Image (cartoon, rainbow, N blue to C red):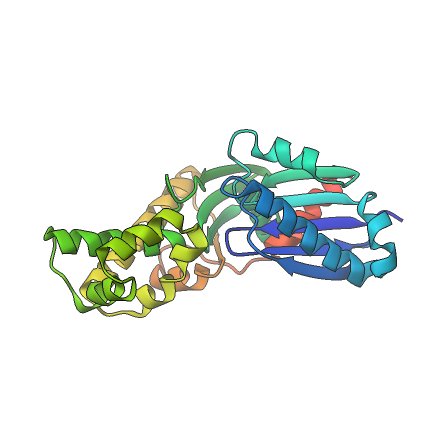
Length: 282
């Protein structure tokens, strides 16, 4: 019996599901972050940990090792658009057949199935994609250093940068910015944090930023909302289609941009999309 493995991996965590040929989910698992560009080895280990948890639930721990080598796997992963990252990961995984795509591709396949539409995936990172006649066009998803506008990580990095600008006198210091500086032990602590921080570490600040009425925080959120709207407008240029907001921040942006486009709920999750990739890999 062929088993299918779906992996949905991003900057915050990794989810796995094992399904049979009829599409029934037999087992699920989870592990830590799985961005294969920023931490390829950590991502590989988390992918395998989530896989083994799902397989153990599906077939029992005594059979999981043997089944692992027979899996048809579909992986939707953050960082898969970095040069060589997907190819290196495929060589390092033990599965019989493996297809690696970006997390955006898996999200589109899960959310839209075969229909036309736009998916705005907004969590630790961000990426946007349009499906038209089953062809997918992706924009964004370039990672925190070069993009990820509107994401939780982008919000955290942006507000810390603004805090340091306030220290220098380029803009007014506000209570919110001062509290961030104090929490890090001063400006030097902010810099020290930034040197070692992963996207998920920056994203921890996102809920506080989104909930704040401080003008520094609301200014950062306003810029993020504008960037998200611009990305969706760009993908709408070929004609209006429904928009699906997904990810941990998806509902927040959907509410802030209410009425701008037709919004529809996702038909399925990115994990469902990864299982579709697994079937295509079989």
